[in-house]
Figure (cartoon, rainbow, N blue to C red):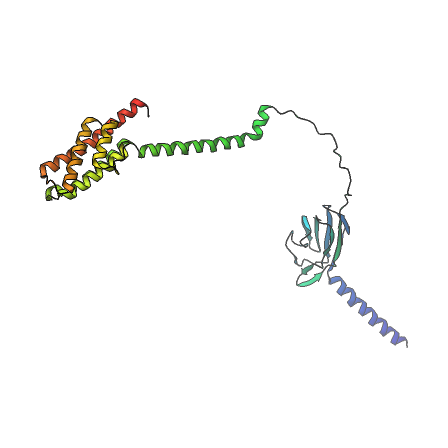
Length: 306
């Protein structure tokens, strides 16, 4: 009987030894929340600790990503030693309600353990009708001109820059329009058109009708653009009458236009057949008229200040 008791006692002692050995080699995961009720924006503290780490690697969610969405993590610090692990998170919540910190997983050397869940109640501690008082009365400060300049100088500079840009665009458009309508510009364009007519060799081939049709068209277009005379729509007799009445064209140029235009009408209706020297002379006369008109108009603009 005594021997049986001794054997039972040995088994109990052996079982306790095994239990103690297992407990000594196990890791203990724990967590704590400093308070379950916090005010809006108040800082709370959540701590996870593991004892008996025995140098094993501890894996969990990345820093600042451990807690759920509504918990704004302010700081997330991890402290480790060969046998201890601690993770301390400061957080705040900015919406009223009850929120849950769920069971969080920690992988300790390949063994996954979970914390216990917590509920956090977030309350608004400000009561409706509470009077908010300043610590001290607001101090009135008198602003000087320099102070206003410092406050609004960039707005003023931006406004001036926009106005300057608008003015520059207006001036450039006026200049471009003036250049486009410049007597010299119109003269050069018409000279190029006359040179193109010359290259068609209507004079050399005796094609007097085609020559005078194009020569009169170029001249009418030039007069209508260079002078205040609608030469492109007036009949020849009417055009001559307007030139004489308005004195828009100098007598020398007026005579050339009258002779060439009347001859062009006669050619057009097959009432005359000019030879090559006549066509050459009419071409050169119109070309000289175009050149002289530009000088006459620019001189007139200088005199009138236009």
